[in-house]
Image (cartoon, rainbow, N blue to C red; front, top):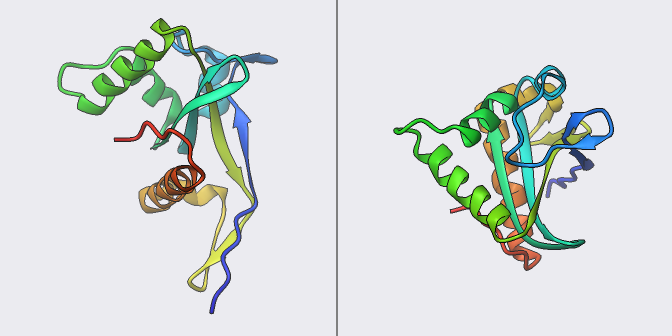
Length: 145
């Protein structure tokens, strides 16, 4: 049997140094410069310090994905759904905390994967689904469709 272990941390996304990003704020140049590129991300829907919902996603370019959530085009079904979901949570008085996944290299099926491998859609989707499933099993309210 092969063992699988993932050493990871979720890092808070900053609008500018020391200031957490809050949806629906516009994407800042600091955020764009520091988070350009592929990512697995996590929205925590919070009431005070209590997490009331989670959404796990993946993107080939996180700042571009955030801009799509802020101003979705009429044919962008995922961006439209997320815009409605996120604005609805904010309108309900919740705060949204956005983090990105950072992990140490890990081995799976004889291959080693590292942070740079997030450039591969299949790796991002694997990690997205792994965390979505893990959060569901832990009893969290997961907002993924």
